[in-house]
Length: 91
Image (cartoon, rainbow, N blue to C red; front, side, top):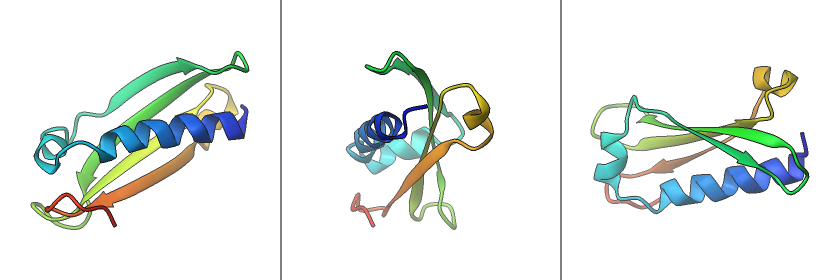
């Protein structure tokens, strides 16, 4: 896995979720999205994005993303996350 390439894909997909409105993200709780992409290096990556309550319902949301190449990285994927407040601002 090319870590630099993988981190760029991860950041790009996480940024797309960060642009979504709070209520749309709430509707996606418990519905993970899986995206398969191919990098310029030729490596295929799987990105998983999910949303959950950060601490309590109707509060902050945690947007989580992970990426791996299907090899041993599947057991220890690269991850990142964001927290969105109910007013839509990111922490």
